[in-house]
Length: 216
Length: 216
DNA sequence: AACGCCATTCTTGTATGCAAGATTATTGAC
DNA sequence: GTCAATAATCTTGCATACAAGAATGGCGTT
View (spheres, rainbow over the protein chains, first blue to last red):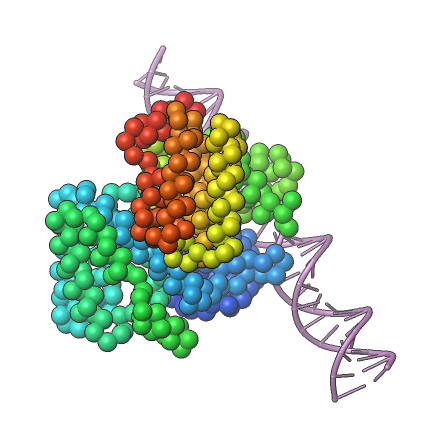
C-alpha cells in the first residue's frame, strides 16, 4: 500500500481499469468506491481527478465519472503514436547504446527467444514488455521513456490479444532479432523503421483488433 | 469561469505555471492558494492532484506541492519528442489532406507570412501556433492531435525565446513554405522530415535555449 | 559558540456535513 | 395506457473539522 490513501486508490482503480475489472463505459460511483475500499469519499475523489487528468476516465460535472471507452479507431490512433515514439526510442538507442543497455537488451531478447520457442504466449507477453522497456531505457531520454511507458501501459489490454493471432509469436520474435541487429549495428534509421512497423497495426491486424475488441 | 471551481482552479493554476507566474521550484501552499482564490482547500487539492498527474507539479507526500523545473536537458528531450509527433502529424496530413484542412493551413500560413514580413515577433508567435495546430488537425488523428496540443502547450514558454534569435522569424517562415509544399504535394515523408527539423532543436540552438533559460 | 534534542506550530491528509444539481419515481391529466 | 410535470431521493461539489506527520524554534548540554 502506497504512502497515502489517495495514491493507493489511484493505482488500485487504474489497475482495475487496465485489467478490465471496470469495463469501458462503466460508471464509477464515489460512495460505492469509498465503502468498497473502506475510506471516505475525499481520497476517492482525488484519485478520480488524477485518472481524469491522465485520460483513463471522464468526469462530467455533477454527473459522475465513467471509464473511457477508446473504441477501435482511437486505439488504432494510439498504436500509431506508440509506433512513432518507439521508432524514435530505437533510433536514439542505436546512436547512444552503451554497455549496460546493450546487456539489458541482450538479456531481455534472449528471454523472449525462450518463451517464443516454448510457445508460451503469456510468458512472451511479459518478456516482450521488458524487451521494449530495455529499448526505451537505451534511448537515454527520460521524457521519451516516460511517455513510452505510459502509452505502453494504456495499450496493454489491447496488445495482449495481438499475440493470440496465428504465428504472431514467432513473427514478433523474428522482428525483434532484426531490431536488435539494427540497434547493435548503430543503424538508427533502420531501427526506427523496423520498430515502427513492428509496433504499428497494419492491414488485417486492424480488423483482428476490432474483432477482438467487440467480443470482450 | 469554468463549470466547477475545481476545473477553474486547475486551468488557473496551470496558466499561472505556464506563464511563469509560479516559477519552477516554487512551493504551492494549499491554504495560500485557497485564500487567494477565495475557496476552500478541497477544490485546490483536487486541482493540484490533476496538475501532478499531468506532470506540471510534483506532490511529495506530506511535504506539499512544488512546480516542476524540467531543466534544459529535459526541455530538449521534450522538443525531441515534439518533433517526432509533429513529423507524424505532417505525414498524416499529407496523406489525408482534404479541402477544409487545406484551407485552414493556407489561411494560417498566409497570416504567418504577414506577421513575418512585418517583423512582428509576437504576432508571428501566435500565428505560428495556429499554423501548427492546423497541421495537427489535418492529420485526422484525434489522439495525436491531443498529444501534440498538450506538448505544444507545455513547451510554450520555451518556444517563445526561440523566435528571438537573429533571423529566426524569416527562417521559420521559409521552412513553413517548404512544409506546406510537401503536404500539398502529398509527400508524407518529406513533410515528416521537414517538420522534424523545423521543430527540433539542433546545434547552436540548444545552447541558445540553455542560455535563455538561465536568465529567466 | 555549536550541536542536538524536545516541544510547539504549521501543513497536509482524511472524514464528515451540508447545499445544489441530477436522477428517479409518483401522481395526475389526456 | 402513455406522457408529462412535480416531488422525493440520490449524487456530486465544496466547506469545515480533526488527526497525524513535518518543519521550526528554543532550550539545554558539551
